Length: 280
Image 1: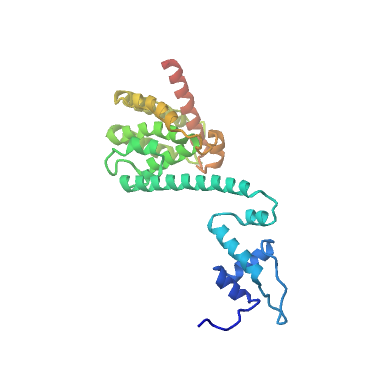
Image 2: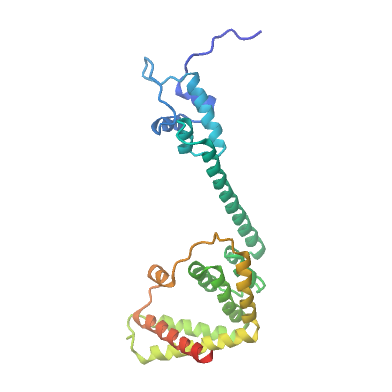
């Protein structure tokens, strides 16, 4: 036999939320944004929800599961926007989310294969360095690549990777790089920017860059760098992250260089520019 109890004509917010598969808090939010008309309150001061309210709540639940935003739901219910327009924009959003998930899974897989934070960098960078033995790359190397990729993009970081390949495979050049890093750190605020040691250190930096460049050419890494341009152009999708200019990056990245160290960097750049112009 079927139950003879009469169903209620109206229910309280808790019962409405339980049936629709949502929460009273969500229903109150629907009222606030105009997605669900607020029903009149009963004699006890509480809202009562009828059949039409429940149907609206069920449609809201279904549309939410489909990924339709609350704003689009409101527009659709008010017939202020064509549903085809809503669905078209939803399709674009879902496609973008799928692309994001694909990139995230690729990053996780690279992390699993590489077994270090190197896997979080772009594939262009990871592929160049993943053959190095464990521990060959220092945390400071990865930090430098991370910053370079942010400023100059994956291609810039992949080219810079040649330097770290050489440092990882040439102990003498690595030792000289460590000595220069220590000398840079000694250029604190107590050092006059025009102290002769600043110019001398800049010359040493320039000589070290020349030695790195020669080692890169001897190892054939410069040829690999040329191939990177073609590879990058072939894989570029037009959706790469917009990079900031080097000048803008310098004003935002808190390096905390002293005046002496800043001048050393500038002098090194000038010497390298002269070297490149005469060498070409």
